[in-house]
Image (spheres, rainbow, N blue to C red):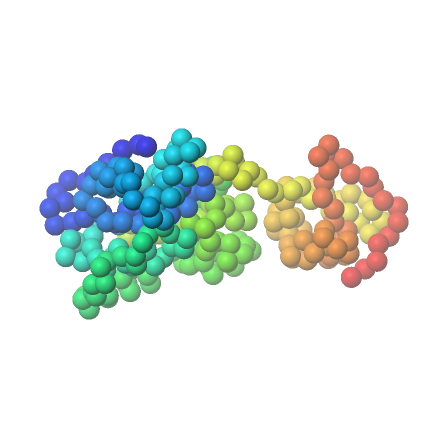
Length: 260
């Protein structure tokens, strides 16, 4: 596991960190530490039986270790609240508690958290990890890219790796925007996009597309209707739609299909 670069002048600050499962790229554990790397190796050597050590055991069987990601740098006086806050953002964690030892936050910290949430934007990256655009929120991103809002949210919180052919990340206003992030790992899940062919009602090929998403974007036909057409064999937008075969060929048809 690679070492993380710790900041200097951390006398009154500490880290909230996450441990990422390299098989799924999802955060599975959230904790607090002045030195996350040292804390991880203490956890890694833990012989007790709990959710965290059972997860570690499954990783050890495959000869791999979690990756560490710094989620926030916070004041030591308020680390309990922030640990609890970040634990609440993720599902399927192996944490044994809700974090923070049950400590309540001051009004000042609550206001900071509220301000931070209201300033959360969405970044769009290509599958190669290259920055494309920034949006006000998930709704704005979904509307302008004609994508699925729920899919974007899943990727932003770590429950998915990509949505609609892009990588998505939450961004706090004022933070530096990364121009490059880790590319989409095709080995874990692969590229599930299927090429699509648009045909006339007489079965003549009009155009080929890399995916349903691209077909909807370039043809102007709602991608959900295209998807239903591919599943149930009807027409959509006045056209027939079929998946392109692996050999890149498709047999043109002479018979008309029934209109929707």
